[in-house]
Length: 502
Image (cartoon, rainbow, N blue to C red):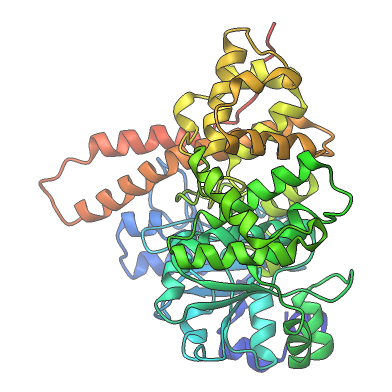
């Protein structure tokens, strides 16, 4: 294990000592006995996330199957420095009978003290170093943040996976309002960076995006490994403001884009600007569009008038509502969570921090490009699983209703189903994408599973909290709660499938 850390990952041994990184024994047979011997309550043992435990299992050593075995263990601390969870990296010592043997990373499930969307890795240490001229630097995963720390960049933080939430940025704002986004330059990293922008504007975080000059690929871990802190100074010289970064993504070449594509891209930019509460900030951002879209040769006042018209026609801010990131079933050091890898392979990158990241958007994309799945999806997807506060969610429910009634007009004739300019821009953007997917039905099921988890998991966590509180109240009858919890767990475990539709 020490060789893996120092030779394979090329981290100094002292860093492991500093961050209390260690190894979970391959058998881990003593953990269950230890917690029972210390007389932890049954509710605490069930909720701690250290064991795989059947709902009706008796509380015995044999029943307590450790979640982490033969893995590199990275403690996850909250902003006060308290260990609340773990990320566990697969090693050669991970036993063959491990339930998650093939998963590169296994992560603690959410518990009453650990919610992924409310925590940033290394914030407990980084907050002491952030300040004037020293912005927070957000990287994709824990190992990226550890690499930054090892070379002297002490303000590095990482989300639990690539999904960014409003809660995380509000937490960050307590300590400093300047942030640099330093994600990988692959598709998944850039989409995650783009999802950050409207949230940053909404929460009052000033964000810049770091990238390499030219067409180079940016991998923070590799860059720091090769160049140390000088690598950071190199990419900082080529940082972009929000509008310039967004233009590079939504309209890579304004000179050759069609008028329709350009209009759709500008509307996407407007929807992000609308997330800013400050009129002064909106004007500043609108002023950045003209230089970013220099090839169009349009003056800033034109964009100001066009933006006002966009708002008057019902244009809205990019949705930034809260949610449970279905693609973040784990956090994955270095941004390498299993779910993240699977979705990247299908060209769909999802979290739920905004409209472009929600599972609704992914399902809408699949519905538009694989229309034959519409009938089956309409049957399998309950209306209340879909968040229709999101533009993608409202469209998904509307389109599925058409399939249910046998009235789907086909994607080339859906203008009558679109009610706002924002909806038209979203659909135009999705139709422009060309997902390369071998098994679209499988990916639809994955999206449905994420919707189900987001819909049911909050109630399950609430029940666990109530049971924990009731553990000390002998007069409380927990029978109904236990029954409801068992039913929710059964539903969450049950595999979903698309039934053939005649």
